[in-house]
Image (cartoon, rainbow, N blue to C red; front, side):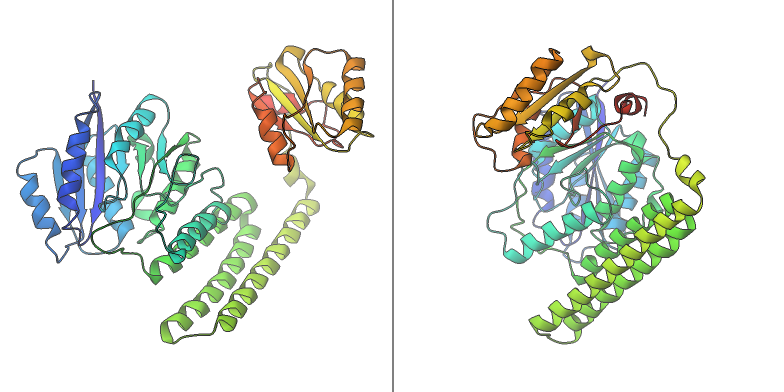
Length: 439
């Protein structure tokens, strides 16, 4: 039975783009024999006649649906479209897609195949190897995209996703039905981040597929100052909810203070931009003061969290490691990057080798630079003395500039399920592999 994928496309003043896009999707649908595509266009009562064009096209294509509503923003349009699709069309997969051709329909096949065969969320990503953004983007556009993505990853806590603000996603309908869509709470572009947060809470299966993002050639971007402010505000709200989840009432109060301070600073900058020009010095000083206050509140929160644990040790005990272990299932590769560690590398190798776990389920890769003769000699002696075949010394055929380069080189040599990194002075707990395997 063919997979039923429903593409939801929000529109506002897209008369020059919508019909060519619908026709392009129809052409690419022919190249996906194992899927049946439907399209839901959600038009915010576009004054340029976008809805009328879709309505005329709809009369000749029974897989195209048109929803018309008041202009309430991107998030509201997606909620409207998702709700209709889930309630009416019984989809297997729901796809988000922009109407301005920035998302090439040729990627639909890969997104659908990924979700239908293994994963619950597939993202068309600009920021993984193979993905790209337009070379002609001005600096302001680059900063908006990059900073927005940074905010989503490191404030909202979506670190595992490289392109958190992508509007090109394929989502397993079963997963989407678990989300209370009307309460996502984002009117504008921050809907992408909020939705991704809700999805990642319910599924670890998020795959990013590289895409070449193309800037629109017709029409105008709908992103404005309000969208940027709402985006940061929602990132802070997500941050606060994560803190509350882990810390209860203490986290609720601390997170609220952090959010208020950050919003005050952002509001000051926004008001200055709206009501009159400001000097670069004034804008920089405002942001610096805001950042300082945020860091201060975060430091207070960290200290309060430590005291929270110290006051009642049983709170920590609830999150302690398991006392009994499941049978070994996962295997482990331990990577030991070392540079000028000839005095301690032998002790580290012995400590990692002594971790209590079946030998066939573990290996050790010691990574040294070719010009570090002393550490190489010390590691070689230790490996020979221990006498295990699952310990290897690997030396890159180039001079790594830093630890990440050594780790990436070693990663290609790893053969086990789980990758562990130990520094040359670490003393790992003898049950660490059993704990990870069990958890």
